[in-house]
Figure 1 (tube, rainbow, N blue to C red):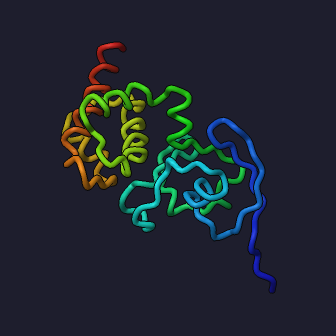
Figure 2 (figure 1 turned 45 degrees about the vertical axis):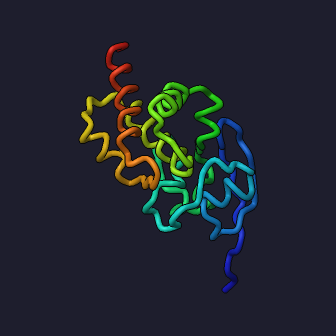
Length: 162
């Protein structure tokens, strides 16, 4: 029996549809970084714990280190570059800057995508729930308080505007 070593995938990344041949064991984050040059998504723990590799697949935040690129065939992926360029994350990015919710910036892309998912959910949440939602994202610099402040500000602003 012959082992399959590559797969041909067609995927929409940040609004652009592309076809690529990828090794079947290449994970999503390596595909984005090495094959597509989208380096905003970071590699951290490589075991799905830290959240540095968070991206959206079909609108849901997933760990890019735990998903194979071959699983993307026919699907849609949004990276931090995509939500930044579209302006979708602009308010949350400003809040992160205003609250000094980023320092080294390594966790920031994954934290922004997680926070954006919470903001866009429309759910009413308090600070405890925000902390719970971002608990799968590790930050070694800010101590989380400023990150919670930034996300809370955008949620409160969203609620006032609804």
